[in-house]
Structures are given as C-alpha cells and as structure tokens.
Image 1 (spheres, rainbow, N blue to C red):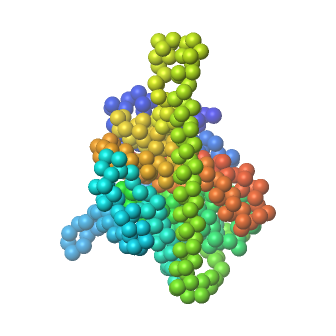
Image 2: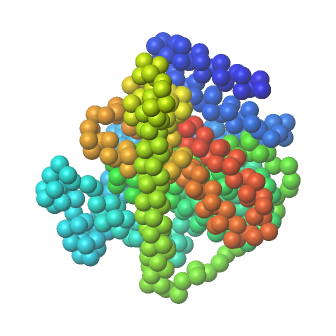
Image 3: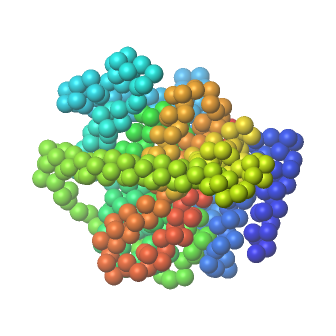
Length: 458
C-alpha cells in the first residue's frame, strides 16, 4: 500500500508540474510509476532476487541508449546506431514487398491500393485482406525455413546465454523469452517443450508475460509495413527480453528450484521437416491458419466495437427521453464512443510515457484498443488516423506509441496462451489459468515501461 501510495503521489506531482519538467520528466516519472506498479502488486517482495532486477533494468537501459543515442566509428567517421536500425527497417519493408508479387498474381489490382484509390477516389478503403494478409503467409514460410536451418535457434541461444548468466534466471525460461524476439507467444515455448510440464509457477508466469510483451518476427515486419516506426518496433522487441524477465521475477519471485536453474540445457532436436521445401509448405499452412484467424478476429471484434459505440451513443438520447434536460447532461458527449472511453481511462498511462499533452487522449485510446481488442486493430486505427491527417500526432508521440503498441498484451491472447501452452502441458492448465490475468497485467505494463524509458532518452 505504501508503494502504491508513493507512485500515485509521483504521478500527481508530475502532472501538476508538467510545464516545468517537460515530456522527458513525465517519462522519467512514468519509469518509476510503472516499475512501482508491478512491485506494489508483487506476491513476495522479500523473495525477489535483486540481481535479476538490477541486471535486467541495466540491460534494458543500455539497449535503449545504444539504439536512441549510440554511435559507432567506421573509418574515422561516426554513425548513429539508430540510423543503422532505420536502414534495417527499410530493408524489412523491401523484404515484405516480395510478398506483393505473389498477391498481385493471385488478386490482381485488388492488391494494389494505389490503383484502387484512383478508381474509388474519396470512397477508397484500404484492401486489408488483399494487401496486408498475404505478407503474413510469406513471412510465416520464411521464418519456418530459418528454423529448419537452425538460424533462429542460434540467435536464441546467444541471447539466452548472455541474459541467463547476468540475470541468474533458469535456462528454460531464458531461452523461451529470447525466442520471443523472433517467434510468437505460443511458438517460442516450443523450443523448451520437454521442460514446460515440470516448470515452476514462476517460470510459467515468465513464459506468459514474455509472450504478452513481445510480438513475433513476422508481425514485427507487418506493423513496420503499416507505417509504424521501424526503430521503435525493433528496439522495443529486444528491450522486452530483459524487461519481461525482471518484471516477472519482481511480480512472482522464484520460490522453488527450477530444473534448468543455472544451466542452458536444451535438447538438440532434428528439424521436424524433411527438407527446405517441406519447411516452406508447413510454414505456409501455419501462416494460412494465422491469416484466417486474424481476419475472423478483426471482423468480429470491430463489429463488437461498432455495437458498443451504438450502445454508448444511445445513452444520452435515452436519458433525455426519460426526462433529464440537455443542460443537466451538458457534460455528456453527444456521440459517446468506446474510443473516447479508452482515451479517458488510459490517458494517465499515455501521459506517463512522455506523450505530449495534445496527443495524450489519442494515444490513450489506442492503448485501450490494444488491450481490449488487439494490437492489430490498434495499429489499423493508427494507420487510418495517419492516412486522414499525417499531422494528427507529433513525431515523438508516433514513435512512443509504436513502442507501447508493440506487444501481444490483450484479453484474447490470454485464451491463445492457455490453449497453446496448455497443449504442451495439460497437467498445468489450472496453473496457467490462475496466472493468465496477472501475466497480462505485467506484460502490458512492460510495453508501457519500454515506451517510458524511450521517452526519457528521446
């Protein structure tokens, strides 16, 4: 209670003196508040391994500094690491563009938004199914091919060795968290599948939090293709590794002895695919299931948002019909929407990320959409707003929004993880269900903390 009272006081003071501390001061207050929020709800602060917290936070800060401020000397000239990351982002965009060739062959002009815009003019709507979804098929097949050749596993091992040594986390959980940079929330745990049934509750919790705090490599490129800042998306996915680890151990400290404690043991398994062609076919099939799931989820969730907007919009007319005067309801918006409600609820979080005052409500609305629906829907809202008015938000706010939106932390993902990880360890289904809501909370806060740290340095 003392911690929670303290962070509320810090947030209130930061709001009161925002003109003096500026947006970087807001973000600095946010770092303390978001960290304190997890600490305040910790199950056992006395059992926390503070070396894990210290090294985790240190790695997170170093990664942010390197990307946002770091420079390297090549041939006597200095080049910023951020510029290098941005170039990588441009390469990713070009790489995703390869999928457009296949989409154009199958769908013709339906996959060419520039052509359709000329035909429909002001009535043009982005052809999401024909332009955005085909890239997921290609990326799923490509990452499966990399997995077949052991490229993904090699990167995962290198990252896991560094973090496991410094942070004293178990081999299994560190490997899975590292894999989340490249793989999705249910695919990454497959690397340590033999150990999942015997994991401690703290390890299971870390697995879930990491899944919520990251996105898969394929979706990372898709969101960059939507217009999200490449530096922000790439940086936050790497920062989420130490962040999700230390926040998990802060919220639910390890009280048992993990089977892979202090070791990086991983069973060396042959690729499940016969050859590269088999890997591409399997990856395409997996991508197709993902594409259909995304399309179906978007149709249903957007329909529910429209339903909610209709219900909220009908409240004021209904109250007036019941006899209340328009003067009494003067504070109530004429057309109340879910987006406005989200903006009110999550504006404090946006403020503490270091968002400029004019953009706080819009960013708060996007954060709420991400949590209640999914990050895909939030990025589409972002894209729609930018398409309507490129100056709808400052450049700083756009970058920090990308930091905060890049993660699978939404209510639907709880069910996805219960199904995916639960299938690997049916005996732990009850534990997973008990941990699901708390893991979502910590995973969501991890993305906000990443954005706040970036907000301090920007």
